[in-house]
Length: 269
Length: 337
Image 1 (cartoon, rainbow over the protein chains, first blue to last red):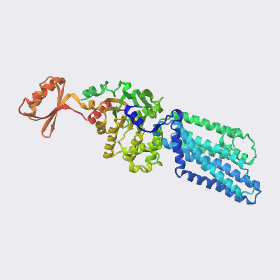
Image 2: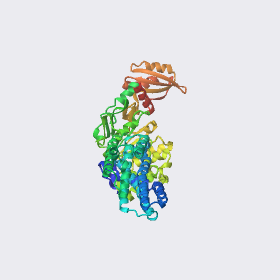
Image 3: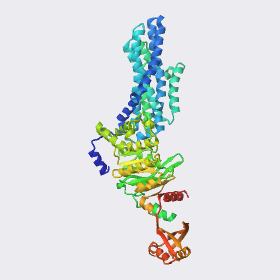
Image 4: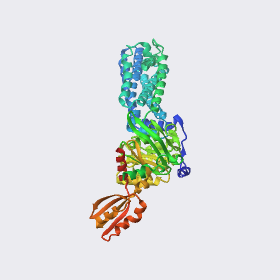
């Protein structure tokens, strides 16, 4: 440091950041990413989409079940909300997050941020944190609260709120998985095509073909998380061990983070 | 001119910017820095030393490897071979520590479009400072003023013109009082007034920091740079103090005469140390470019031998001086051959 610069800093009351290592710049980047969610119209647009979609369809199911046995209406409404939530939020995440890393690589903002004392891990992790918080809140938590309120007024039989909360937390794992997957793909590829294609492909293949594939294979995917969540909410254990998809999805998310970091460390800007 | 230029520039190895400069005094030091992309050799064994508190212009035609070199220095990409150190720290292993002391302006700076200029600077400042908020605000105001963006401070950068983005880029690059400013084409997107302002800012910052900047605007280099490094096709073709580079060729003289021109040329050719004379007519006068092999003899006898003839009037005489464009074009041409 030049003596003049040192003097300028000594005279300045600015307190330097001393963070080093993998967490360099993390707080600042998380703050910026969260600001992009909560400081713009993004949060209410997302909330509106998911409430209209998930709670709108749930309302239709609840209203159409007027002549059905009360228990069946509850089952139908819970199943619709959780299964549809697990699938559509996955697609929504891939569509929204696909440009999070790729867009910054293309525009040059990633290179700009990486020219500051920020680690590459912080750059990717900040996006995982902010998009997870954003989607968990706007696509899952708020619609779930609205669903509980709807259930109070529209369901003919009571909903077990504890079990429903547990079920929502299983769908939350699915949300985290798809956020991590999309960020990881963004770190691995240079274009949006492979990111969106692989991400949406994974969601849709699971939705349409999981019944045709061998169960042991399907269990090693996040595709069954909606079914696991429904079984917890309705206290109806499925034919398979419910813990396997949970553990496999969590492990896959951790592995994806590892691969993404490894790849992103080698990224040339 | 060619051989002389080589002597003056390329073989000027004692110059701090050239290979072998004193590492301890250098803010940037590269040894054999090489980068290849597949079969393309973007940089081929660059040796460079940038002295502390200097302004170094990094010149080269488009595609010569300037931006590649800058990205290697910042750790944005990894060298295929060779090594770069900044402040004695390795550009790959110690990249974070280096970046905490560097300010960088990209060639086409891009920022988060939903943030205002002030928010962009606050975001940048938080990488370096954790408070107090009041001091950070003051620093932001100071940098906005420095680049003349006070009136646009609270506008989202989405609507910024290229010139405004460039100004914001300069502001964010120096918000942390960097020990080294690396600017990639800092004046490229600016109009003449903007360019002048940027050069003024660089002049003002000279006392506080080292500035390493790439450009293809030769006038700017001539105006503010202490040293020049010229890159072509990934190779360093020259590096020297700007003054030395422009000082010209001490073995070539320029003489402008009127009157009995033939007699003057004959008189000059009679000297054994005159190796070559080229002539050109200029507004009714004759301009001679005289190459010599003995500078001392030329200094004492060249002019005298011409004015000895009463029919010859000398209107100009002196050593040949170059502008950077001459030097640059010549070097690039030589390298191309």
